[in-house]
Length: 402
Image (cartoon, helix red, strand yellow):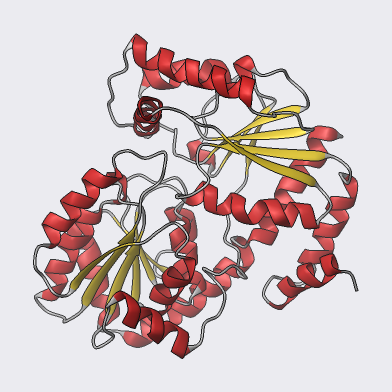
């Protein structure tokens, strides 16, 4: 058996039957073709994390695959963060100078990067204008990971002029999409069940991590893992915990980090630290983007996973928590509403009070929480594993390359 077959066959233990055979048949249709992914950071955030897993798996399937990362000044990333917020409905001010900074950076990157491939997938708003300046070779597809259903009009009008030049656009949910004169595709993001963040851990491994990061296991742990971003509502999580704490003893662990393309992270972290104050049962952990083992252990040690986003792209931390057999309480936003089946795999909430109510319900109904966790793991197995994601990307390549 080849090394390729051995590595792919490792997934047979956890993915639905027939999945690996389907991947091989699809890969045969586009073997010898090339694929390029382009995004704005190699570390931090869900997109970078997915690409770290996608690229080697595409390579194992015989698809020549590369990953390029655009660079830019601090001002460029401030502008793109404003775009990110504006596309998710937050009012932002854009000057002509800001827009010119954005265009200049995309022009510079187009001249610097090797963008030649049969299929080019451009991720999110930061590099979307590359298509204006790069020589076209192959089919270009824009992959939008955020909710652009109700964008600030000026921001969307500016970016739309570039999006319409693509050969297609991929969205994570139907409701995220906009009216466009190009084909649109739906592909859910995914998690890799064999990655360091999601593989099975022994009790000793879990205990060692919690000892190292200073989180005791003497009471139930409520856990939110996300970047320190206002749309993730970490302050709302702290407020919900304080309501719960009046009645039920528990710990809150907020785990996050920063990303190269998010200049607001440090400010939000400072607000979180201020809100946590001196409460010994609130643990704010700033971990590097590579701390996958630590996050895995914390998720497995938690009693309840929280993802109280007010705006969300897809929110794969929900699927990660569900894969560990945990009930998840999430904000009624973005892809969280697709991952959580209300009352079956967890709960979606719209307020601090609602979040606190559901936490208390699960803490005081352990059998309900256990059954939800079991349901959640099976739902992820059927819908949100990376093998399904790869199959859909390969199908897209087949359709584009005919």
